[in-house]
Amino acid sequence: MPQRPDATSKRRSTMVSKKSHDELAVGVLVRVKAGTTMPEFPDVVCGGWTGKIVETSGKKPHTKYFVEWDDDTLGVIPEPYLKLCEAQGLYHRMACLEGSVLEPAD
Image (cartoon, rainbow, N blue to C red; front, side, top):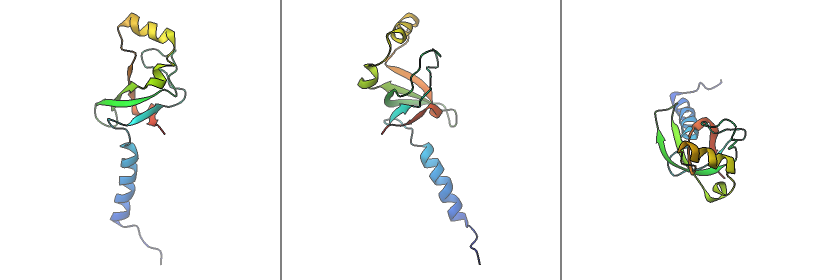
Protein backbone atom coordinates (compact mmCIF):
# COMPACT_ATOMS: atom_id res chain seq x y z
CA MET A 1 0.00 0.00 0.00
CA PRO A 2 1.49 3.44 -0.93
CA GLN A 3 2.32 5.72 1.94
CA ARG A 4 0.54 9.02 2.30
CA PRO A 5 2.77 12.03 2.85
CA ASP A 6 2.43 13.23 6.39
CA ALA A 7 2.68 16.74 7.81
CA THR A 8 6.38 16.21 8.60
CA SER A 9 7.34 15.69 4.96
CA LYS A 10 5.35 18.79 3.97
CA ARG A 11 7.19 20.83 6.58
CA ARG A 12 10.54 19.57 5.34
CA SER A 13 9.86 20.62 1.76
CA THR A 14 8.74 24.05 2.96
CA MET A 15 11.87 24.37 5.05
CA VAL A 16 14.09 23.41 2.13
CA SER A 17 12.67 26.07 -0.16
CA LYS A 18 12.79 28.64 2.65
CA LYS A 19 16.42 27.78 3.32
CA SER A 20 17.42 28.29 -0.31
CA HIS A 21 15.62 31.67 -0.30
CA ASP A 22 17.46 32.61 2.90
CA GLU A 23 20.88 32.10 1.29
CA LEU A 24 20.88 35.85 0.69
CA ALA A 25 21.70 37.55 3.98
CA VAL A 26 24.06 40.15 5.38
CA GLY A 27 27.65 38.92 5.08
CA VAL A 28 27.01 36.56 2.14
CA LEU A 29 29.23 36.86 -0.94
CA VAL A 30 27.06 37.13 -4.05
CA ARG A 31 27.35 37.30 -7.82
CA VAL A 32 24.99 39.26 -10.06
CA LYS A 33 23.26 36.98 -12.57
CA ALA A 34 24.24 37.23 -16.23
CA GLY A 35 22.33 39.79 -18.28
CA THR A 36 21.48 42.01 -15.30
CA THR A 37 21.74 45.77 -15.69
CA MET A 38 22.11 48.46 -13.05
CA PRO A 39 18.69 49.72 -11.93
CA GLU A 40 19.66 53.39 -12.28
CA PHE A 41 21.45 52.89 -15.60
CA PRO A 42 19.84 50.24 -17.85
CA ASP A 43 22.72 50.51 -20.34
CA VAL A 44 25.27 49.33 -17.75
CA VAL A 45 25.48 45.53 -17.62
CA CYS A 46 26.63 44.28 -14.21
CA GLY A 47 26.18 40.52 -14.68
CA GLY A 48 29.10 38.67 -13.11
CA TRP A 49 29.98 41.44 -10.64
CA THR A 50 30.64 40.13 -7.14
CA GLY A 51 30.45 41.56 -3.66
CA LYS A 52 29.15 41.16 -0.14
CA ILE A 53 25.65 41.89 1.11
CA VAL A 54 26.05 44.60 3.74
CA GLU A 55 22.42 45.50 4.40
CA THR A 56 18.87 44.50 3.50
CA SER A 57 15.72 46.57 3.24
CA GLY A 58 12.06 45.63 3.05
CA LYS A 59 10.13 42.45 3.67
CA LYS A 60 10.08 39.28 1.57
CA PRO A 61 9.41 38.84 -1.24
CA HIS A 62 10.31 42.47 -1.98
CA THR A 63 13.62 42.57 -0.08
CA LYS A 64 16.34 44.77 -1.54
CA TYR A 65 19.99 43.88 -0.98
CA PHE A 66 22.77 46.44 -0.60
CA VAL A 67 25.88 44.91 -2.15
CA GLU A 68 29.37 46.31 -1.61
CA TRP A 69 31.51 45.38 -4.61
CA ASP A 70 34.73 43.44 -4.01
CA ASP A 71 38.16 44.43 -5.31
CA ASP A 72 37.85 42.22 -8.42
CA THR A 73 34.65 44.00 -9.44
CA LEU A 74 35.96 47.46 -8.60
CA GLY A 75 38.85 46.73 -10.97
CA VAL A 76 36.55 46.04 -13.93
CA ILE A 77 33.80 48.64 -13.46
CA PRO A 78 33.62 50.56 -16.74
CA GLU A 79 34.72 54.19 -16.76
CA PRO A 80 31.40 55.44 -18.20
CA TYR A 81 29.59 53.95 -15.19
CA LEU A 82 31.97 55.72 -12.80
CA LYS A 83 31.30 59.02 -14.59
CA LEU A 84 27.52 58.49 -14.48
CA CYS A 85 27.69 57.82 -10.74
CA GLU A 86 29.85 60.87 -10.15
CA ALA A 87 27.54 63.10 -12.20
CA GLN A 88 24.49 61.96 -10.21
CA GLY A 89 26.17 61.86 -6.81
CA LEU A 90 25.88 58.07 -6.49
CA TYR A 91 28.36 55.85 -4.67
CA HIS A 92 29.85 53.46 -7.27
CA ARG A 93 31.21 50.96 -4.73
CA MET A 94 27.74 49.71 -3.80
CA ALA A 95 24.38 48.91 -5.39
CA CYS A 96 20.87 48.15 -4.20
CA LEU A 97 19.53 45.11 -6.05
CA GLU A 98 16.60 42.71 -5.93
CA GLY A 99 17.25 39.19 -4.73
CA SER A 100 16.08 37.73 -8.03
CA VAL A 101 19.24 39.00 -9.75
CA LEU A 102 21.65 37.69 -7.10
CA GLU A 103 23.10 34.25 -6.39
CA PRO A 104 25.62 33.08 -3.82
CA ALA A 105 29.16 33.37 -5.21
CA ASP A 106 31.28 30.22 -5.38
